[in-house]
Amino acid sequence: MSATPQKNRATRRVLAAAAGLATVGALVAAMPAGAHDRGDGHGPGHGHKPRTVDVQLLSFNDLHGNLEPPAGSAGNVSETQPDGTVKAIPAGGVEYLATSLRTARKGNPYSVTAAGGDMVGASPLLSGLFHDEPTIEALNGLDLDVTAVGNHEFDEGAAELARLQNGGCHPVEGCYEKGKKFKGADFPYLAANVTKEKTGRPLLKPYTVWKKNGVKIGFIGVTLEGTPDIVTANGVKGLKFHDEVETINKYARELDRKGVKSIVALIHEGGAPASTSYNYDCDSPGAGDGISGPIVDIAKGITPKVDALVTGHTHQAYVCTVPDPSGQPRMVTSASSFGKLYTDTTLTYDRRTKDIVRTSVKSANHVVTRDQAKATDMTRLIDRWNKLAAPIASKPQGWISADINGRGSTAPEKPLGNVIADAQLEGLAPADKGGAEVAFMNPGGIRADLVHKASGSEGDGVVTYGEAFTVQPFTNMMNVVDLTGAQLVTALQQQVSGSNEASPKILQVSKGLTYTLDLTKSGADRVVAGTIKLNGEAIDPARTYRVAMNEFLAGGGDGFAALGEGTNKLVGASDLDLFNAYLAAHSTAAAPLAPPATDRITVIQ
Image (cartoon, rainbow, N blue to C red; front, top):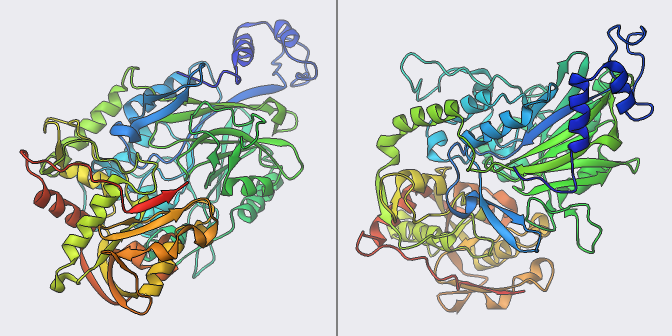
């Protein structure tokens, strides 16, 4: 397993070995000055405990129900080599994640495993078809101790989240396996900043305390305050989402009053490191180095009572220190997504102060490589659920001639985004289907690539229902609405302004819509209004256009308030049905669909 070279943990391993093997005298001699005491007050040899104990914190985030290794580029992590080149390493899959975590725990008597949210939601068919019961079952088997909720935990609403926590069969579809009732998560989901509107009470537990042999570590879990902006209105109905910093500080004070001085915050919000390589030294002092994004201000505002932050949401890999309000460095980590990495953090716990010795905190991200042994219990779990999914999952939907990248593309305009937008336009253009003239797709809703290599026995180039579902797992209903040309222009400008200014969300557009995106400018000016054309004609601000989009965008999601102003709404088929219909109509085994050109958005860098 790979680790960042500068985070060498050999010293800690030596001490851990000494703690297990050495006489008390030898151990005391091996420890730094001031790092030991007389324990229970007796002399050496009478139940003496060392002053400090190393607690291993293993963490990951944004699994999104990826039980099987993610296909294509979405299943790679980037690793910078000693010569400066970057290598793509295939990673992830719970069979390997289980092995990685179990191997890492060996020789660490104090080990706790925590997660930063989005364990489920936007999941591949193997998990999504069964409302993510397979993933909860897998997480139980991984011995997850605690997780924060993420925004995707709310995709199916508060009642479904409660069922994932507490168990019970699905209210509509019932039990999936004869004679088996879903048991729910045997770890707590924490949602400190989510309250019920009617009562003001927390939806789930705000925190939990992990204990072993007198060592106590408190975990507070929050999701991003902006969850209602990125989840459908039904998913967050009756709920209120509060400020992350204020909430964590409130519960840190409560834990402190209860005598819990060691605290870790699990935060489903994140940042972007200057490099996408997991082994990038986030604390290197060069110009433009480090980390940016919402987590930086959050970290700077969280009380020094909190000793480390496990984060997520942005699907990035980083191990950084960000100063707390007192100016002291504090560890902030994130382990990419889809189970491709895990973070191993050493928290040195002082038995006398009951706090973490912050200067001793070490952390590194490790790759969940696919060249290690698979965990047989996870293989059995995957096989069991795959048998149930097979009749639906393996049905061919169409054929492709090469990979069509979506999630794995870093370009503003993605080949798979064009296919999806074209599928939506084609399906909703007929007058009786809505009369759509243009379609928009939110980039975050494209959850995978279409991969040419066969995932099972279907043969190369065949797109199965399971693969199509993995790309479009939300089964959002499509809407066609009236928008003026002026509203269309505003919507395109909202891609790069307002809440999307710092981290643009570039809509995928159907054929016929063209414009220039000038990234040398700032804010709304980055969309060059005079270049926006539909089928070669400039957009008329006063004219009404029929616009197709999924229900999430039509509700103003992702900061697109202008798209939420549509009128004369017609509800069409689901996004997945339109995607599959397009694949069937535009491909055969003899004439597969080729990756489309990406020439709709002209980008000036």
